[in-house]
Image 1: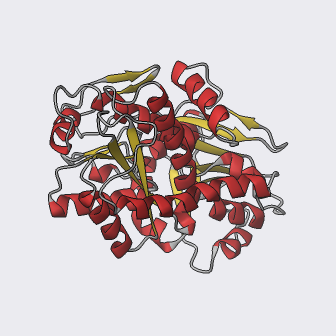
Image 2: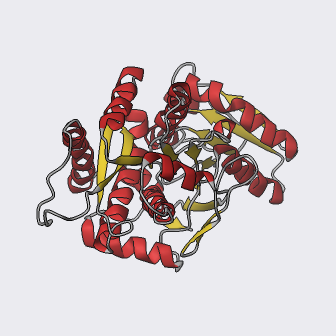
Image 3: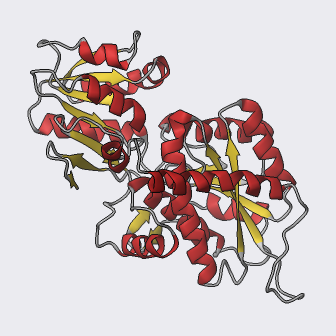
Length: 382
């Protein structure tokens, strides 16, 4: 159970998304404090998924993006023009995503889509943009699936799920671990990610045993026995991982759990995950306590604007805003959807004060992966 203040502030951010979505239908925004002849503000749209399985990532990513855009505006906006950060909340349905995209299309001064979160909404949006042949760039989404790389309108800058799995399994291989288990939070995760995990385990010569939660995660966890591998790779979100670790809490055999970037270790501790089970998680951005300049800037901005702890997911949202702004600022002349898309399609190398975006041949701009860990005594190490 999260502390009330922690939960309230984050949920209030998402509740604010609904009112912002409603205002987007209007032909424009009033610019209080602006002179009549001031340049019209540009809009940057962000779609966030509020379904239970995606909310934990989406809300942190949104907080980071909001911090980023407020800082950008404080520093003069993009080429002297203020950025209106237009946030639209979706409920996981195709109709909701279609409605959000239609609203964005009707917002004349919206030049780019930035920071779609979480992974399911980002994946579905790639397909929708391709289907409709939209002329709008889809920048820095929380897009984990590398099978979608190479789309001419989408520009992912964070490491893929496949990169994270490979890194997690490689670390085990270097330690001489001969086998591991893969636990899937639901049938959906099993169907989506099983092949990636199997491919990585074969490449690194680690024997793999897969677990599908046909009777639920609690039943699966309690059913593990002495023959089950000690090290388990968990494919799912933070609430599901809490449920799973609680189910293995009282087992005699010590387990070690590896999770991917969708898991928020800070939230995991607050929600009551087992402290008897060491948990490691990959993350696709630097540690939030790192001395990298962009991380320092993120911490300072977050502390000034929000009563929130730094998290990898909100740092990713902040980086998404900064990258979007950096590329938009290179556009010469009129900044429109078409000129913005052309600028992103150049896929230039960008150094964001220590976080490097460099696109590979497949069209993904980042492969950075590191790991952090919750120790049995409740400390967070990175």
